[in-house]
Image (tube, rainbow, N blue to C red; front, side):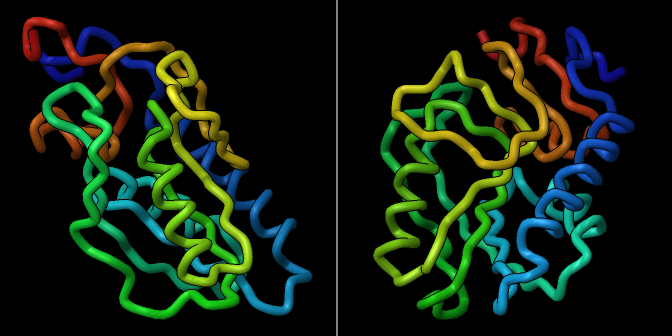
Length: 179
């Protein structure tokens, strides 16, 4: 365990097992759809989860990336900025947004609305982590890896000031590193 981690919330083995379950669920839901979903991963945190999840989706899927920011340090500031948009049109496309964590819900609410404005026929969310105690908007993910308590977490894509994304698990950052 990294010296900055207070405790591990979700092990690498748990992430792989749950990604397999979510991949199978998505496969079963979309296997009879004429057009397969486009997975849209929100950079940078969702990349490890996307990489694990797509191994377990048995469909001819495509994926793309958006870079959206709403954080400064440990807090969501509510000002959603789109840094990188999609590389293709999504008109009449079923979208599955891939998130590392649903926290306040502001980012997801904004991105979902944007997808609909761009003509997506459906927008669903798959998230590795869900932190409902921090929610400030009414939004839920259709596919959830793990519900976690209101702690500042790092690892498996999640960062603190761009560090710790490469940890193979999700852990709680010790308070002395960010207070």
